[in-house]
Image (cartoon, rainbow, N blue to C red; front, side):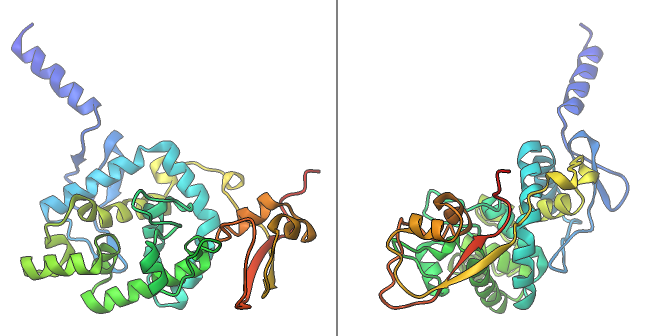
Length: 296
């Protein structure tokens, strides 16, 4: 085979593999399979400096990965339709930018995940951090699994981080790298700009993963995710039942509420046992669905 033919074949193989290509158009890049996306991105209103060659490539990496994770990204879009309406008003009430809902996406995939290190819930709190932020964490109750309460705890953390580091971008980075760890790097590297810091790979990718999911989930059809309205996951109407006493048998309690144990646990995942001991008479609100489970 002639050398020129070999080179031509190699070039074609490289292009076919989906290697990332930057457009000559100033504010557009192309990810795998040549899907254009904007380069003039921002996080929480803070501009992403894609004029820096490494920033551009790091963004490109995450866009390519997430555009082409078809089943995973499809599930995220479906779940977001159910979870975002709960998260969004809590972020807004606390003055935390709406973009932080995508932080929850990359933390947990919008499910009550459990990490190898012991972080739990949609917002992936470790036990001590959760307790510091006012969440109850014990054998029978773990409010890291309570979406509304854990979202409020995340807001408290992020506002404190923003006050400490000065930008929402750094606040987001600290959610992964920790405030102490991030401060050590700031002190050593003499910079408090996320895009100028040398960080661990996970923290260095963190904001770019948020940016990629934000872009794709805000514009799903642009990236080939044609999900009909009826396929999106939806919230069901619930009623809140206040309890200030011990429940010795949650299965019996569920049946008295017109549901079963599975449904009770599905809508109250923070209940971690078969009973709820409550000697302090604390008031708990249990969510009881009033639709969505009729077999007829």
